[in-house]
Image (tube, rainbow, N blue to C red):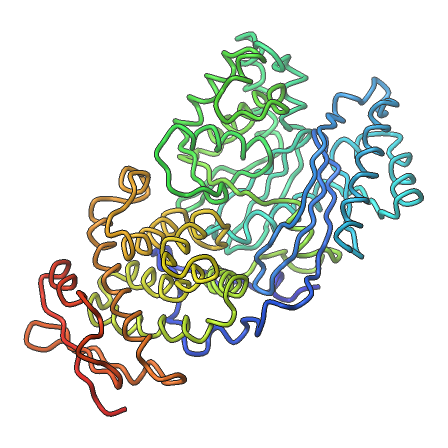
Length: 544
């Protein structure tokens, strides 16, 4: 069992600081790979769910980040194939077996040696699931196991919460047949329950697959509230967050994100306002199946079940008293990939502290793109810490942390286009899952990189709710600071420590003393610094 996943978590303050303690940037990236030529070790995860089945081939990086290299999804709707006797009909069994055959071929095509396959609610409730299990093992060599609700909840927790900036709250994974609910605190799982509140089950039970009757919608809401209350699901306390995962939640967030200017492409970490979720649910319940298919961003394969998922998600937010729901783009499959061993029984399942996840995600990201530049990134980040402390001190840790991160990841763009490397790095930041970082933090980081190169932010950043007017001013300053850091680092001798550079406040200006500088270095840096900070900057060459 991975000690990292079950260690006692360290509570973090709610200050929004990226790192709980100042990282030693000169040594922090010692875990970066020496080269990108290592043979990848892929894991295949198969999730035979009630609504759909999915196979994912992925690699779990040392820091816990996940790279997906292939996936296949099959819409099964197994919950609709369970007969009155509680058994899957022939069509349901046949479609599940066909999906497993294709998944086995996919895993074989990537040289996967180990496959972890699980079945959830529909197979748990089926009286003849052994037919699928036997076919999986005997025909395809896939060791399919049916997991109970508590294990499903635990895997969902490990997958969903690992990369989210969430310490305390409630997680709800809304599948096709069931809803797994986890109460967690200090990033450890404290209580869980599996309830019959899946999107497909609700849609079928209350006739919501096509145009819904108002009475059926009302009955569905009452059923969700009553089921939550009967199970003893707690309300949110002060400081708690509500996290949602599963296909329906991801689709709902995609529909909401599509109607606002939003700079972050990835879904993981998106925050759905409770009022917006309520409005979207009303829109969906008032639409027929064909009308839903025409909604921008709608997945047609989920059109028949999305109303059930929307009602389950909205009713849960009402019941728990949540102002918003944080979306996790990960869940059961990622949890299995991170901890495929048997779950612990003698202490709470937990995920690593947030500061650990954040640091590891940066190291993993740089290692994927430019391991040969790791030394430069470490030194630039150390320079950024010194410059940030001199300019902003302890008054604005947010901008200091973001500047350090930007300095560390800047070379990612070198792998694509050196002449536009800041722009290319920003593009990676907004598209790639960055475990542990909020969308606000990612937008702030990407905006610094873009402003460094373009001098002006695109409208999707300037108009986004993620950045305020005050943020725009700080971003402009940080962009100039990043340029200064890059110019300094580019001229330091190879192997020279960042500690040889000093930033000193003197006579109303910032004086930078550095072992290596020339009269022509840093073109236009002084003018840009004066423009953004209203003070001068001077560079003094000193003995190292």
